Length: 185
Image 1 (tube, rainbow, N blue to C red):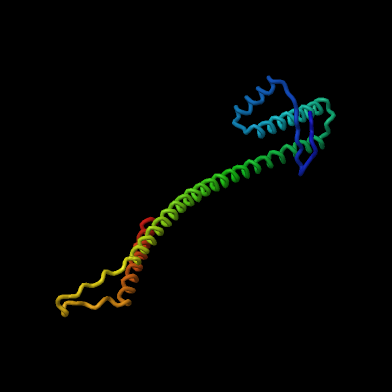
Image 2: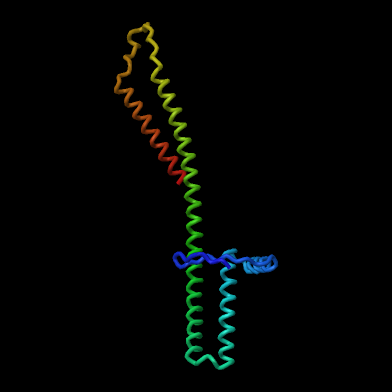
């Protein structure tokens, strides 16, 4: 067995076992549905507890274990079971929090993708509208033909009338966007 240095209370153990033992260990881990490293830790800890328990039983049978030592051993077992129950519950809570986080992360990712697609579509529409706007600006008004009847001729539209037209277009555009956003919500 190779044991590397302790770091933050954790020691790395490396052992070599025969193939049959490795297969038995893997089968036991799979049978219980444990993660591989978790299963190795559980099997090692269970084996250690078994050896300690055997030692206590032998001491009891031989009369070498005093009443005080037996009481201390039982107290330690009770404390260990209590800690295990707390750790199991905390693990359950952590799994639930992790699952909720994964769900919210997935929803955020989906929303992000949707918003990116919307931004791309709006950028394309914006570019098309700008191009159309430029085309409209480049269009020069046709020269007015001399009216046959001076009474029927109308003066050209004043700049303020054209501005109110664009303001009206802008107002309609904003209203349509607001309506579209309300339909999506």
